[in-house]
Every structure is written in C-alpha cells, then in structure tokens.
Image 1 (cartoon, rainbow, N blue to C red):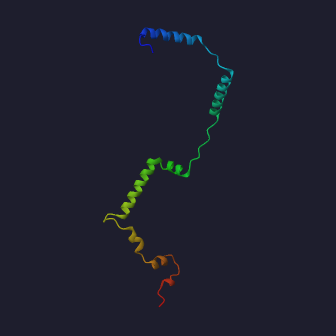
Image 2: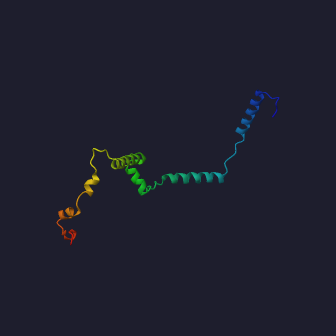
Length: 123
C-alpha cells in the first residue's frame, strides 16, 4: 500500500477499476449455461410435486389429540392431584376403600343368585 496517496487518488483508482470492469464483459460459457438451466428446471419440477402426507406415530397423534404438550401437562397435573387427594383424603370425605372391602363376599355372591353352598362352613 502506498502511504503517500490521498483519498482523491484512491477514488480515481477505484473509478478506473470500475470502468475497466464495465468494458471487460465475459460471455457465459455454453457448458455453464446448460448446467444452470438444468439445475433451475430440476428445482422447478421439484416444487411441482405434491408433498407426501406425513404419517405421524401413534404417540404424536395421541399428543395432538390432547392439545399438544400444554394439554398433556394439564392432564398429568390433574391426574397427580387426583392421586394425591385419593391417598390423603380429608377427614370429612368417606373412604371409598371401605365401601369396597367392608362387604361380605357371600352376600355379594348371593346377590347374583348363584349357588353359595361352597362358601358355607362344611363342619
């Protein structure tokens, strides 16, 4: 780089370079033109093809059915709250397990009008 040049000299040199670039026009070779047009045609034809429908997995369809990750997060939170309330129910709520396990088995089978003689003590 010549440190003795001024900005005006650099501008004149740049103008000369641009003028020279305008005069030196190179023609596009036939081989390059064919390659460019072939590539452009393949891109055009690729865009004309209809998109194939995406087949989502069962998990993705199920997740979409619940409303995405937000819906699934709400479902998990509500389920965990239900489990927590079920295990540590307040004292004023009846325990549903007592309703299930407190009944006599012979009474339940007898209600079905089945033979309950096998339940009786055979002494």
